[in-house]
Length: 157
Image (cartoon, rainbow, N blue to C red; front, side, top):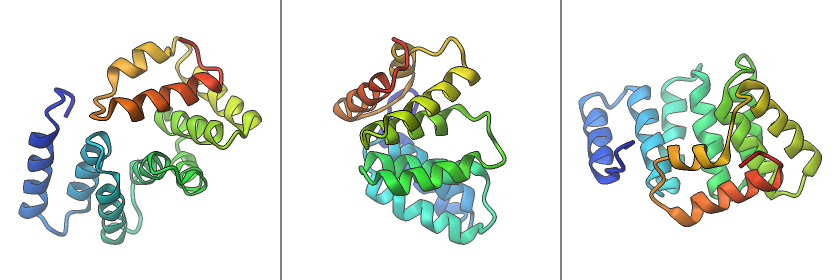
């Protein structure tokens, strides 16, 4: 996926599920690939299945669920799940980025700024340029929109 070979990454994730159809982590890992491959509807379906298979999930399940909801512009649901990802993990960067973007998209400026402050607390040298170049997003338009709402919330270039 990070080589931006999305179709190959999806096939590998599907193979992992074929090999272990009751393995929640196989579903969850495919979800991450699907999110970056602009397949968020399927990602939502599969992360919900992973949550059924593992009812006491690690925090990244909630993060990926929240990220998928944010991409689908279901910001309130995104916020709900991103907060769950942070309950016992207050130093995770990416949930705060998606929280910042979700609040910013809802024009909830104060909350967006607070989430952005957490991003900078965790990674003081954070930059939008570096972040945008790091993400293996297939859909450039959605990536640009994400970076724009992070910029609107005050994160540095």
